Length: 178
Image (cartoon, rainbow, N blue to C red; front, side, top):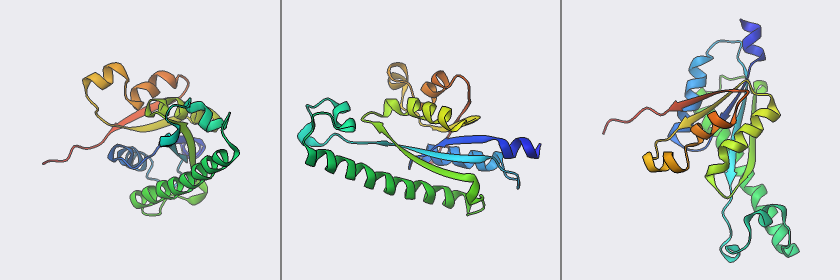
């Protein structure tokens, strides 16, 4: 069993939400022993469209097509800064929940640009799962409401549909008593 756990690759979608914290906590409870799987924490950076570009096709911002050179550089620099901040925050969230017990050599943090919509996060996580060879993908479940779930679906619902070859765990955050 130790060999199978040590060879297991688990990808966790992490942002600053309670449901993402619940997903991380769930993985920490499931794998408490010394032979732990390799974890990849993925944060999908959802960039905002700059106000002065609101009528430009969003794909142009990412690949820089047709943008003035100064704006291409400014956008790339902002994305790089945002990725650094997000990576530090993801690591901080994980270490707060883990208490520094997870072996550093078994932990990877990846921050990727996900576009301009949160609806694409499941597809980005699915791609990252394929690229990293993840055996299990874990995300938190946030309840958005029936209309949202019917029209857009949650990240977890979309992930279960998109991630065909990988097990997907969708973990709900514990509800706080008010």
